[in-house]
Image 1 (cartoon, one colour):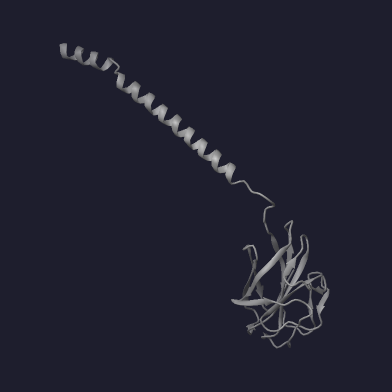
Image 2 (cartoon, rainbow, N blue to C red):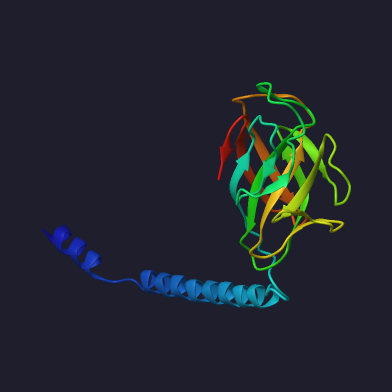
Amino acid sequence: MNTNINNRRLHSRRGVAPIIATLLLVAIAVVGGAIVFAYSQNFFSSSQVSGKPNIESLKVIGYDGRDITTGMFNHNSQAITSTTGGVADNLKSSGEYVTAYLKNDSVQTVTLGEVRLGGATYNYVAAPTALTAGTFGVFAGTALITSPVAEIQPGQTATIVMDLSENMKIGRDVQFKITTTNGAVFVGTVVMGQQSG
């Protein structure tokens, strides 16, 4: 019995070590929080954006990959070219046109840097130069843009006309990728022989 009473006395006493350990943990947490707070304040104050942001937004609203000879049209069904560059032969041949309709939803002018269709890269041609295989032009309304760079103004819907650099079968899904000069990438799909939008 005597050992039982001694055990009870030993367990009922509180030592100083747990209290000091708790106080040390609280102190470490407070100091760590203060360090993180000071670091984050310094980081966020030094990384503030200066000038206007470069947020670009192009919306792909449609395409025209039909195999026709009557001409190409913009997104409002207005004629932009009198011919599609080829013949209706159940094949989109090199030299025929494919269009993509893009709307600039950003608050600034978007400059197209690179246009790809089916893995091939297309080079920009400003008016009045005629399109040749492997090139593209930008139409605003029914007029070809004459700017030395491919620009789409804020709120403007433009038609990108690509002169095919390779033959493509009707029914083939072809991905097109547009990269702006700021590095933003916009992707869409064209089904050869069909129109959308």
